[in-house]
Length: 161
Image 1: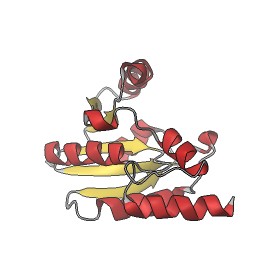
Image 2 (image 1 turned 135 degrees about the horizontal axis):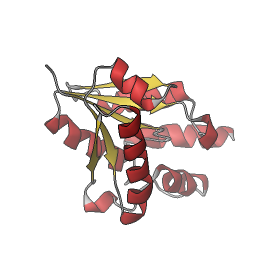
Image 3 (image 1 turned 30 degrees about the horizontal axis):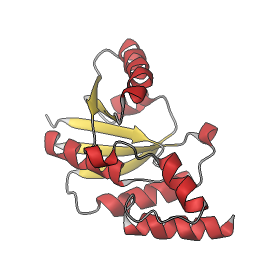
Image 4 (image 1 turned 135 degrees about the vertical axis):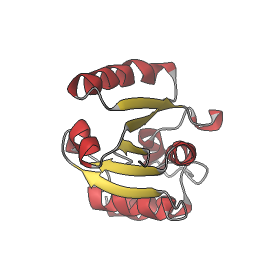
């Protein structure tokens, strides 16, 4: 049986920190599915389809990584994909409390699904999509924080606003 993990998130936009976690997870699991959440409550800059496209391009060279989207309860999506684990990135202690609550709730909803917490490289611990969007909105250089195609997409999107 293949060991499959789901890495869910809004990825609005995908950052180098996300990519670092994806690459690490790809070494541990036979298959990693990057699951782009609908999450309209966050008022995303990019549509779900745009975010899926950006993620797909970023992971194209990772043979055991695929990209999908979902708008259901996460544990239902994980079960439908026949995955065994949820991968979640932790940047700082401040992330832990929220992620811990989610992990416990997911366990309560489906005890067969495990949550694996992964930390990105220390150079990415400060990085978040929210911060990247703010830098881009204010005309700053996001090149060190996102893949080149994401940087370009941010520039194009913010010119439209």
